[in-house]
Length: 342
Image 1: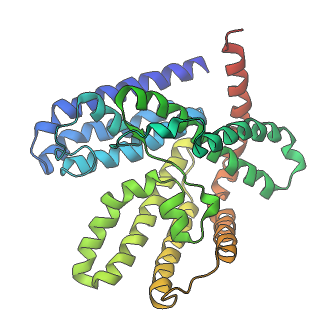
Image 2: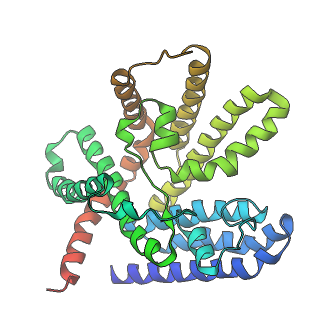
Image 3: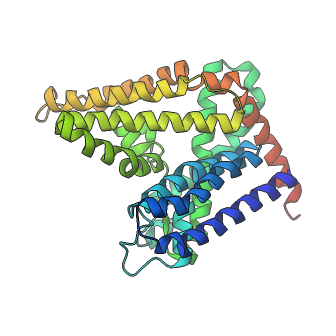
């Protein structure tokens, strides 16, 4: 574990140094092909760095932040778009540039009241923080549970773990730089439609980076060929397709197994369903007529669960990632316990 942590620290030092290079060199090169060429070595480095990690709890966020979020931000930066572009006035300071390039950070004023312990969101986080060790404890009895129950516990573990990591990370970012981390989830269990689930509640960093890099460019190009309405649907499906391919890449980093494309089909299916949902809302559910959330909520979550069981989870189970994550949870718990001051 100690060597893995050393690798983790070295990777992030390299990433910070690379981001500084992007601030001092490519930033002053005209946008377009020339700037993209100057950024290309950093993009390749961000792709290569996570291969040094094998522990899921360190590798997964590093892969997501560097290979997906940071590289997509650099692609936008190459053409003077996105959060790193030169449109800010005053220009971004170095520390802000590095933080925004490597972390899921948005430029906004810090809401001081959000850190108030009496705030409902703070209370909700405290409840989630207490639930996480309970979920890890339940893994001890997984051999007695149905496989679907174990998968449900696993999903809760990932959801609560990400919430905890982001909440802890947000404190120094807020106090030192005055920046806020982007929210990762917004109570996804309250979703009333697939559009609501994927666009407004689940893994919000993904739609926030896919909109400027995939959705808007595809929509703008398609509008000239298909018309505005069909271009919007094509952009939705394209965004889900790219998300599926990026998830396949993340799976490859974590398992080193050849992709079987089930995850891509999962996201492509949901992209087509979201596009169909948009059509139905515009053409059928007109006016004030809407499905009752008591019906649409369970229907949405049920569809996600069933299709996830068919297409999203098989690669996890086939490659033993679920067992690896569970075993690592106990290992990390022991590591923290042994290194805490008495």
